[in-house]
Length: 438
Image 1 (cartoon, rainbow, N blue to C red):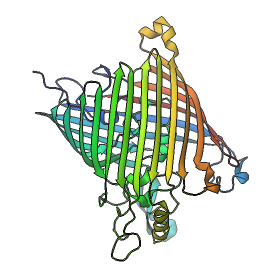
Image 2: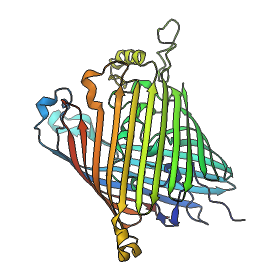
Image 3: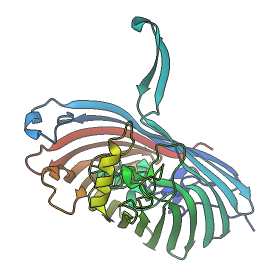
Image 4: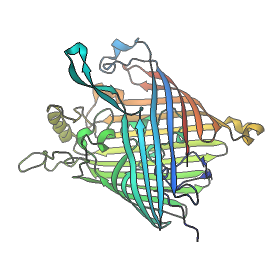
């Protein structure tokens, strides 16, 4: 009996060949044994982008928007993500997977002897960015329906986290709503049970909990999965789950969610103690998400809806305000809201499907439109001056695939904000790849 190919979490929805990645690859499937007979697999994805934003980039553009209405446009070049996958099949159902991600080309720093400053040694931050280990796990497959994975894993809550590779969305940058209110890409250390049975794929995870001290108004719980320390505090735990249903070829419907307490999950754990007023504050985070993908009849349509709730927000904001004023504290001082929401849908049609020669060449060109609504700050009371977090966003553009593994993208998008805030239009151009090297 041939050795089955061991894959992570939810499996590959469709592979057109051993060397071709079909768009809509599950995030935690990316590190996998991708061809029969190969124990070692090496691959990755990456993207480069150029943007021109026709609105102010001033830090006070939301506090006094009338002062920045006529500010000049600004532009940027970026390498949002460059990722390397390495997977290995040890045999007997044991596999290993890693994903190393360089965001914005990584970080850079140096120490220099400054001759023009009395020969002082100075530490300089040369560039911004991040280098992260997004996945590192060991998986044991007992059967197609039963697998256990332990290590640093993707938390597949929402469409963006489960399908975050650049060939899985039309816009140059990742979908903005989910990328704003949820950690992205959400990854944490824990244990997972997953498998596939019939038309269903499923996963349940037990993880290190989120940290409410890193929640804020502009991003809700986005920063809560990170840690400024060499370790991740796990005084609190969280649980995530996802189920995907493949109704028919080309149609997938997914439901996912997360639950966990977020207060008393910091270092040092000095919020809790005898006689302290916040001993019983939990900061329970609840997130629910529904998403779907239709890839059929020369159309690709994707959509999602996410809603989140956070308990004890008044107490959390009081604690954050006090702790943020300590010297060099990593705590985010901005308030966090009780709820957050994100709804988005995009649809693209392959216009090359109407030309016989282009169909035969495997080239594709999708004209697409996208709409999304999101709000990262829905408080218990009227938010007044913080209505800028309430965003409607529209994007239109094109994705050209000269070969299945590469997409050349362009879009025009605009954030439509409530008065008195100024709308934020931009033009974005990018190129992305996803594929296997070995």
